[in-house]
Length: 582
Image (cartoon, rainbow, N blue to C red; front, top):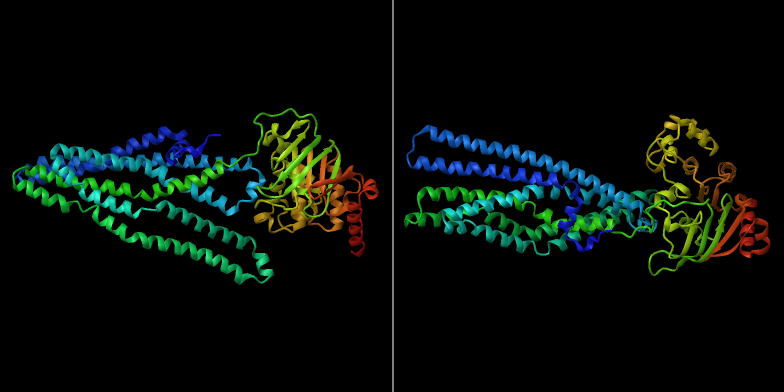
């Protein structure tokens, strides 16, 4: 991976738009011609005013210069619009590629990295920060380049006419820029603070919306609303304070910069009066001096974009530079679907206690293995490591006799179907949600797997059946209904390894037993790993693994564990007591 940290923001920006570099260069070329065309009317006006003052009454003379002025104006319009069109097309293609690159990057990150980052932050970066590149790429590159080059050409021409007037014409420009630079002190730090304030506000909004049910249930609306209101107020006040601090210097800059006639007129009249400059030259200089300021003022409108560029690039690169899962890029040759963990340890982040501590386990292909243990014992961590959501801290995991690091993410995803207790459905039809397990499946195959997963009956009772939209995150369905659909989706994938991480937790015991029976037939011949909270559903497992404090305390069949493992005996008795009371 390229080391972005050693590159400047400009270099990174060029790298992002490298694919469309020729289009950006063409855009700059057209923009320069367009701005040059915009200067032509100034020069033409100087010639005509000079002609009037000299008593020239030849209308053909004025027709020529009016035509030249009109031609220059048309050149400005045509080439500026063409430049803008080209730069915008190249920009939005670049931003599209950048967003795709960011999304693909997320698929290669460990789940821990994603889960530890507020979803609002990803939304802000992928949507707003990337969109913040648009003014820079589409406008700053062609337009600012042109608006800086043209005043330079005019200044050179003024030097040829009269070097004294050339330097006098830019006195207010120098003073105005000095004032602006003074006002821009600490801008990067201020903008960084604005980014943090905005991120805090977004996260507070998302937290409030996501937790609205809990907030209402526990009558915490006032306190939670205060947290949201404080974040919004802080964000607004931050910008108000920032603008108040900059207002004086910005007003001074905007007043001083275009006032170059205050220096050009007195000095020019003095030089003309003393005979050191011809009147027609003075007139040309006065009008062209005005032409210098317009493009410079236009170029300075991009000052904010330049100032925020570094912060935007940094946030985007935080994702692009994030440490990826250590995986091969070349497909491996897998020999079956045996799973072998050798001395595996895992820690969430740095400085935390080990979630798994030197775990060794073999899961034969085509068998059903159940992971049980107290809450927080490491069952789900173990399942997620097998699913490839994280890299192990120590030890190795083999799938089909191949070390997991040698299996590309895409190939591993084809080998494993993972269903967690945290169901998620997309706001599409039920049919489309199930078909995500296999995009090539026919309607008949979707409906058949739904029947076998026990959800066909309730689906057909819905108003639009399989074409019913499930709502955001499946909100229009019950927890048990969502879970059945996710199980059907996983079954349709037909992967050789199936992991069910408390996938039936949202179901009542009767429905859970029914689903377990369906799963038994659907997963026949597959390697099945189940984390179950009801032990009665896994009594027929080929292997029950008891996990406690990140270690494997015992492993065996149901009858063996009841004789040999005190922890499993305790768990079983507690389960049966609850079942009897129910």
